[in-house]
Length: 298
Image 1: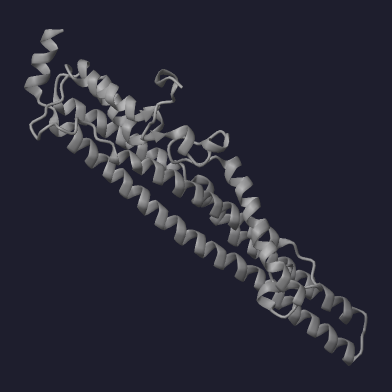
Image 2: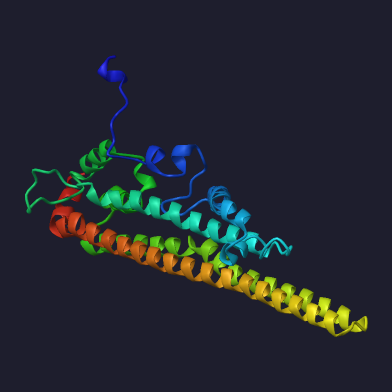
């Protein structure tokens, strides 16, 4: 095949490397995650989790396993199923976001200036377009990468900027916008982390009401001592199941919260790396006198 018909090889290709876009889904911008895609992956993870536990549930030997299946064969609470699903949904969100963050971090490896350029290489309106063309040859759709989009905006406006401080202000504004965007992208997992323990408490309240209600019916019926003993045993068993529902929710929420905090720290470090990259690769190579002199030539 002629070389003119070959697909260009890009170091970064968001359409083929993003964990959502490469499967044909409508992917979230930058490191944001599609709620629909994370929902589907959450369903898959829930199925895998229960599929792995089901053989042990059939043995009916471990209460730690039985409590994920409405507490055991004798109970009918469905709260643990919803608790596990919300946890898996949140976990799926964090997995996808971690993958998307890893892809965005690869933009830090892109060299903005020529490899053979020395430390005295200066970026000016005269060569800004050449740098943009070089960047487009390495990356397909620069606007899909947070860091490179900052660089593209700065280079694209270089002709209209007369001072280095104006470039720094532009990059600072873009960095603030990215920080706000990243913060808002965690809305779903934060909401799920709040909902998981609440759901556990709801399961506990329902279990308590069923256990106490059953015991009250026996007492109201004027049962004898043996019947009361049996009913009281049912109450204690119901209480155990009710508190197990809360235990599942609290442990799941704790694990997810720790994972979310760790991922937020990684993304915060990435934003700092982006700021350092823009300073080292772009701002520090701009010279105010050069910009003014080049602008007079146009």
